[in-house]
Image (cartoon, rainbow over all chains, first blue to last red; front, top):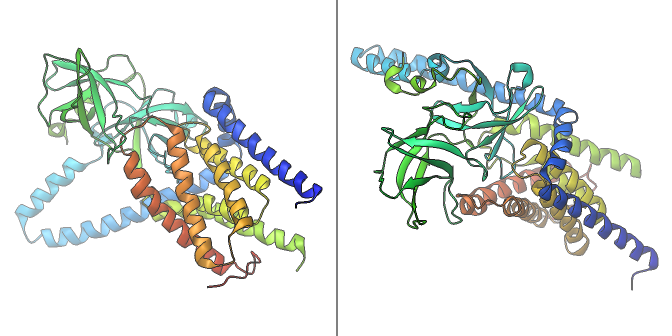
Length: 280
Length: 164
């Protein structure tokens, strides 16, 4: 039988556990309270560690660039023997040139500081913050398309809410531009990959598989013309007056290492930047 | 060996794991399955501490995680608190000083953390199954292997007599 002092220690352990669980539940219920605390942690205790991670990310990128350069050099030597191959390779590389060169609007490049938690990808920690000119609701894109929107801005880092976040919504249209809807993450427990849904499509409209869906610009947060995804097909359950289509996302936030943050207020050149034929 | 010196060595190993989490992990690539050094540090601390301290340590590690990935604030804190508390109880009840059992405990802890956090985050967005049954087990396995290496390398510092 445990002694009185043992029982007292057990009680203390259980009380500490219960307190931590209650505090966690309070944060789940009131994210605004927790937001202040986590903001303070990011700006103080975590700052040196995030700097280390930024350095690690950039040195990994530099190593990858060196490997890429070496393979490009080897490819160039090989391709020089075949002019047609060289030309094709040149065209492909031109097409792959950074989105940044095509963007006439202002942007801020940022590294994605991926974390070990399973919810990484719903939000992303970015290596650019207020010091670099990032502001809340700036749009985050990858060369393939839309990634998300900046939710919280710190001095040196910012947090982006991606399209995989359950609360993400964006107004979108399907090319050529006669079908509009709202894009949201697909809710399906048995799914094997993150997909999107285009909701609110009128019953009379139909979209063939492969149709490109782009942001419409309605709402004022996302500039028009950013690729969001391509239509896979209609969701089997029709919900009354609307059709819901499943989309394959254009860009996956859990994978990419670099993104561009579009500065708000100058969205004019965005649609052209994502049009392949306008590549230099 | 004196208790303060033991404690100092434990904290040195934990500090090393924290630094590795930020300096080494990004270089490994594949962020969804790369070993989680912070969780490993929590598990190493939890299996040597009282359940209350382990729960508090878990809450702090979870809060730090929530600061970096605030998809659903509180989910990380809850998941790490539960895992820290149970790991400490598990050690008191049945964990022998066996490398394999320690590895399995770390793997189960890593998977349980991911499962609790995903379920507490809610949303039911696509990819939950692949997260739970593909990425989470792979990350748990890699974290366990890393943990086993850490236990072998630092067993004298951690004052553990491992049976193999």
